[in-house]
Each structure stands twice: as structure tokens, then as C-alpha cells.
Amino acid sequence: QDPPPAPVAADAEYHELQTKLAVENLSVASFNLLELIRTLRLSILLMDEDTMTAEEEYQVLVCQKDSHEAHTKADEAEEQWRQLRNQTLDEYSIMVENNSKENNNGNAVDNSNTTTTTNTEISSL
Image (cartoon, rainbow, N blue to C red; front, top):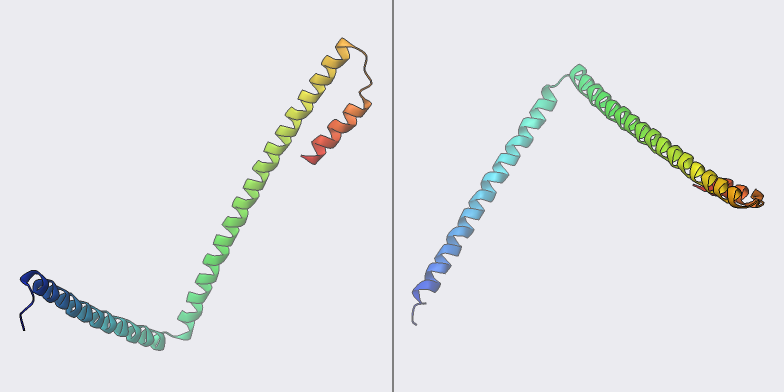
């Protein structure tokens, strides 16, 4: 049987070497992970109850601080939204009022329906 052409043989050798290196890398990674697990177990066994409680309390404080900051930012954003909404409503009200005055200057028109509609439109915003 004829041997494979040189490029095919070289490619096969290359892939075989890559496979061996990958297996070795997996073995090293597994060993390191097991070593880390052993270290963590040992540190938990050596850690006394006071230290564990203090660590848990610290984590709770960090979470509470983050929660408080999030609430504060949400309140600030809501206040900015309210101010912008009120400003827009004021501008809209002034615009409607000016249009109403312009209509009144030109001719005497009953604007009772317009005012009611305007107030309804403003409240719906």
C-alpha cells in the first residue's frame, strides 16, 4: 500500500500533535481545578464561625448599599422626568393660551369647548 502524500501525512501529524497537546492542557486544567477545590475546602474548614459571620454581614452590607444607590438613582431619574413633564405641560398650556388669545383678537368666538378640550389634553399627557 502506498504511503499518503507528504502534505496529507504532515497535516495528519500536525493534528495528532494538536490533539495530544489539547489532552495535556485538559489534564493540567483539571489538576489546577482540583487543587483549587482542595484549597477552598481547607480554607472553609479553617475559617472560624466569627469570620464566616463577618464575611456574610459584609456581603449583606454591600448588597444593601448597592440597592440604596439604585433606589436613589431611580428617584433622581423619576424627579427629572416629572420636571420635564411639567415643563412640557407648561409650554403646551402657554401655546394653547396664546392661540386662544389670537383667535379672540380676530373675532368673538365661544372658547368654552376649546378650554375644556385643552385641559383634557393637558391632563392626558
